Length: 316
Image 1: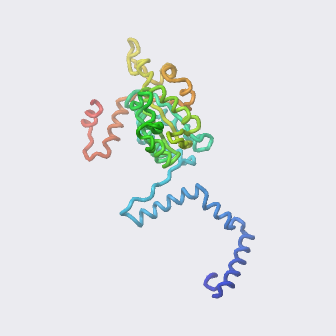
Image 2: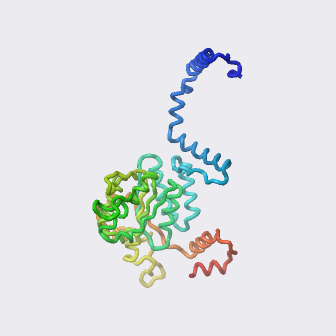
């Protein structure tokens, strides 16, 4: 109504609008455009707006995919949602989930910019799956590095590019491509014990400040990333899963943490192990856990799930 009654002369109209604007910001200073623009450029506001725009885009353009949603964990509600999401999709590892979520709280609070975990446990109990689930919710960026491919001294160059004079020197490295996308990743170094010792030296600067220099001299930024290392080192050394003497009890990971940790630390360089923030232990899975996992895994398969089928899957 105010704007419809303004004079038609442009100069007079502008004078009136300026006078009204000055009156408003005198009464309500937060309405000053400088403050408003500062809020508009605030990262939190932009992240929320991206969610809104993605939803509007999806409604108006069903034929095209919506823009990538920027994910982040900032509040206790986000932490609760993260824990609920992981617990729903990872069976039998409640203690491991709790320890990871507690560490993510420190990152979300700003006390830590990044975090590093060493996942220890038998094969097939959910170490890789937990890392993948965390990546889905932490930033949407998950990258698995198979350390068996880096068993030779020179092979870490695959990550940061070939040195000058070698074939592929001008090609963009794998880590450079990831750093261009974001500095916020969950990077899983799977079966770290299979990597060459030089690979650990390469990892030191990444774990120190989240940066690494590639073959072109560029500093690659992973400063807000989470680094996860998985290993079953030490599990066989203390005979986890084997019977304890002549008793019917089995050796468990939880009852052997000190022995397993000592075994792990003796097999890796001290400089590398000292940069790990948290050691996360994974339990062996019970038959009940296996049945729940089978049920969860078959939930998207278009077949009828019944006891005989689940028994067969668990047994085999």
